[in-house]
Amino acid sequence: MITHFFKKYLSIIFIIATFIGVFHHHNDLKQHNDCKICTVQSNLSHADTPVAVDYLTELEILHESIITPLISLHVKQVYTTLHARAPPKIS
Image (cartoon, rainbow, N blue to C red):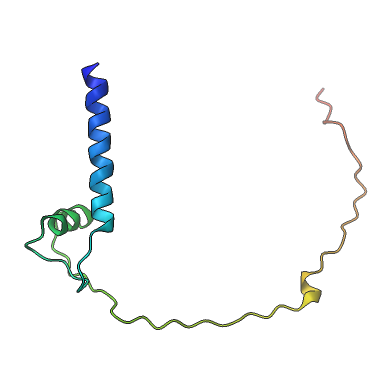
């Protein structure tokens, strides 16, 4: 009974901690050494090794509209000579 409660308690704590790490951010998009959530999050993701993280401040979005002719979307019917309906006979 106690182990079942303990497993459920740890799973709830794990889910809450995961959500806190996912939704945590600062307005300047940088990690802060004085923030405990940033410290734990960087230690988990970088396996306790110091890694310089670069953030994109400006992102240029390029897109092109793809125009497909209707002829290429037309599907022709495939004719086959095999008209089997029963499963194969295993002898």
